[in-house]
Length: 210
Length: 116
Image 1 (tube, each protein chain N blue to C red):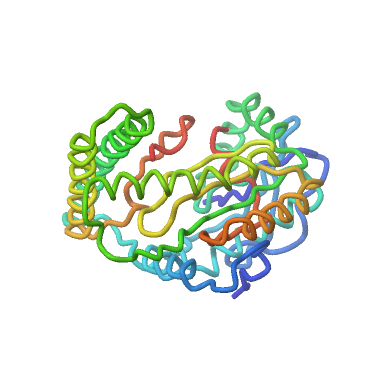
Image 2: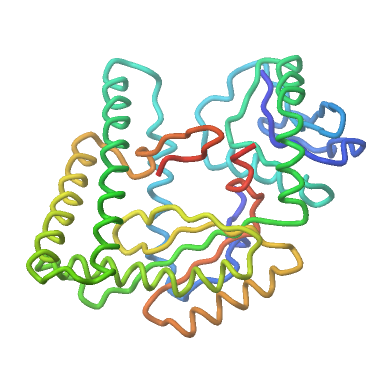
């Protein structure tokens, strides 16, 4: 079984000499302008745990230091190198286009929780509607200026409770500090919400179309 | 284990509300089990509830848009709100019954992205 970490540009650059999951050494497979980085495993890796998630993540982040990487979702495996090569050949154009779209960029995650002073149960239908509209307005006030600082953004529906926004922003590396300052400025301007910004992450969200 | 602390770019002083999610992640990781008859049933429930949840969210968005556009009388808004509230509560009950979290209620549509 082959565990894939990411598809990279600059195929002349070999995989870094370091271990991946289960301490297996990183290997790579080149197909024209693409390089897939992977590890080989004779046995199933067992139940996924947080350590394995971080091991996968750190490999992708190491690759990101000297090339552009389409990060593979945790758990992406193929049977053997022939299957991996087929994947690269079949999706050559899509993968190359996706790589071009994320070159020089990273993903930042933003979540916003509303601090509700009226924590009690909602009494009327009207109140429910108004509170939903208020949540939407709170999210827009933060999302719109942040989206203007990003090359692209994707919103997921908030997961109920206090959450009013869950978004991913694709940001140029050169604009990272500007984005971060933007988050801090918005947090100061809107004390009725708590804004959490994490990253930089590999652009998982923006690689999903490839 | 690697610490994710270096991933905090900007965070409020009180991180507790956000930290609640970490426990959910732990549960998601430890809750994975192989396919057995009970699990198949749960998978089917997740599939059905995903579609129901998608419709619920679309309805809610549509209703909020109508309220925002104005022109609805108070009685209509009240009725809409009560319906939406009841739908959300019922959905929460169903999720609890089948032991499903919001993360379970999603479909990966491949090139089209995630459903919800």
